[in-house]
Length: 335
Image 1: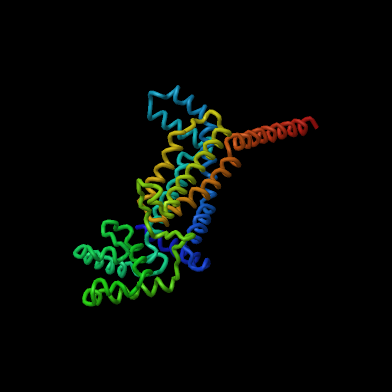
Image 2: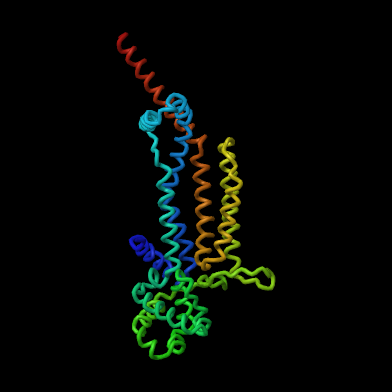
């Protein structure tokens, strides 16, 4: 289902990677920036919808007092009020839905670079990974030789295959034997050719983005550079949460602090970050920082006070225009 979105997005990711000399991290960063800029009009619309809801809240409260016991009448009057005030009941939902769809799509893009960025056929990838799974299941000792291949982590198998190809494309035949290799030779060589043509690099300042961080209680002796990614994802989420909360409190002092949620989301990012490949963590970092910066700007430029003030100016302008028209009409009648 996601192929309808994944294929065009993957094509864009591929173009960006080529633009930056095959640098996967740079393509993810720029891709995230582009997506957030495209989403900017929807974010502004969502903010305006939220403020509009705030503007008509006193009228909604009045309707609840009058028709609170009659749900049907309440729904009718509420819909009528929304129409009269030009407020959309679902105005704030669309950006959230679009973001969720994009989140899942980008997640699959990062986990499937051979299919969506290198241009390898999905059937070829499935054939090769299935064959390797079958062999590793029967020969546990082959697991470490094939980039620590883990058949349980089905979602990461394209990344494991990238690691195998990058380590030594010819090693697969040596490990599984000529007989088994002959059955997958054509699809495997097609994948290798596509990967080498793409020239994609998963290196980020010495950190391998296809690897998954493995947490150790012995923090100091077990330290790995890739731990910086889930830790950075936690810090980025924490920073954006604090900034967003302070802006909300500044423009709307009566708003709840949401301190519990502010701590919960970064902690979830940290925990999940130790179970996903580094590329996914890096995307979360980019998304938090870029998305947070843009959203903060939207909150400041289209905050409740500013938008409500603009609405008030429009209302006063209409009143002034009406009164000016009435005065002009009286002057004409007097003449």
